[in-house]
Image (cartoon, rainbow, N blue to C red; front, side):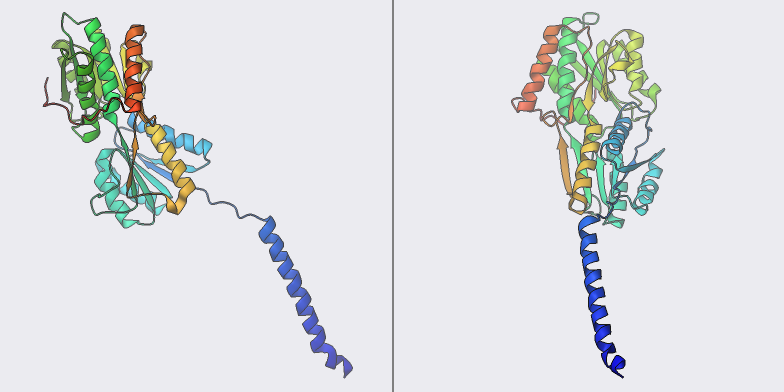
Length: 352
């Protein structure tokens, strides 16, 4: 009887001891054991042209690979072989649980807006297009925009100085070949005109469009026509297609100017390149998104310029005089400091 009488007291004491033990153990676990961080996943959806375009898509992937190595993010590239691949690739990425999806190119604007609207909890970024007031008004897109006109200004200034020093057949004429007539292409060409006229108002500048970013033969034909008309320097603003411009320059013994990446490695016929540091933009965007997570700012445009090291000029040919190189560097510093403001974004009416 006495045992039964004390059983409730013994049971209560055991519960108290267990509760204390469990409580102490839980507190120790919360202090000493950290939850494994969730891997940040990034998808890159290319424009047409592929990763071997030596230009735009190539640089975007370079930025992703750098982020994978340095930031330890998980990354995957979705290749778009045609415009019809944009929406399926973006949708697959969104359904795959990627934290950030980056669209590579202006032409992907509508597709990005459409998919971003369907997946409002996923963060998107798009190169060369705005993240504000997109079609359907999604609020989860960041635009990555560049002041291409500043890079165009630098190479235009250099091209005009070079052709003035060494005219071709007595002419001081330079040219440019764009891909499609879209804002980023036009900003490059507009800056090219402005920089050339700064260097020498008498220099004649012309431009044309291939209506293509892939077919090198189309760009080469246009470049050959410009060279035949007296252009001693031709600037390519057409991605993979534009490699045909540089090929024409090499064939005819004149200078070509590369775009996006520094394309001087292609040979001594490359005067320089108007660099657009898509890799820098991609890496910095991934870094910001990984750090901020849900707080990553969207419905917003990040702007990359000479001042922010987002655009610039590549290595200048050894055939250019030191005085001309020094002049170009002085112009670059003045643009970075805001002394020279490159406001031109639309080139003059098309010419040959």
